[in-house]
Image (cartoon, rainbow, N blue to C red; front, top):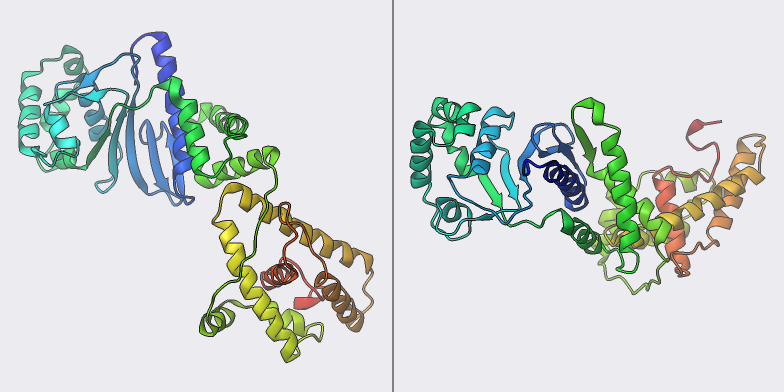
Length: 380
């Protein structure tokens, strides 16, 4: 992974951890990042299918690599011995650059040459000659010679990310990744420290397990917590949404589940009430999705807004306890619904339009995050 000095090895391990953390901040939400499981770093689906196996090679020196280099042969040997399935991506991530005019540069840089036959011939020749005593002593050449010719096509699955920044630049790269996620430059150092701290805590807790893995979802959760501790709430505008009548009806028919039954359970299912509720719900869903797809501070502000709505509704329910029967439960539900339809919770530092708040309440009722009638669904 690194030079043989103790300092170089430590730099390599820290660089590996920093790269794993950065990858978790930039990968899709439905994957797992692993360290020292299948490879130096690997990416898998939530159900365990390996998507990529990566060899990470950090050096303190300005090295170049070619098809003759020990680093290259060690990476290929790791993939020969490793568990990577035939369709998974193989990546060599290294601080070294590819040697100009080398076969590696011709094959793995976007030159369009890709002389795979020449590279394969050169590697076959070196494996027979065994010029590197260290590689020979480790059985690297023997494993290549014993590899079926069809298996040697793994060369065409490899990607090389060369000339990568060294450990000293890791903080800058992590902060760039965070700013790409919408974190303001004014708070990005504090957020980086918190996210990296949480990541390293997870990593240290796994030292006895023989490997480490973390879901991108968990790292995103750490990011949201770090952001919430450091960010200022935002200001938002609510321009008109342009949707056709057909689009609105399609969503209403295909996505409402408990919204109308919840209103019926408090005798608020008159046509006008239902129509207004569905329209507010549709517009709120569209705007809420924009927030959920937005920057971390927008996601966080929406979550705070929703907590405010839920807490207000819950407080109203507690004020009406105990419930003395079905008719009382229905009357309580009407009172709570009426109060919630007049309530507005802050969205960041903005007072959202009342229809947005009403639509958000209907979204929660549709998802059974709250109930108007406390006995809706048959619960006592």
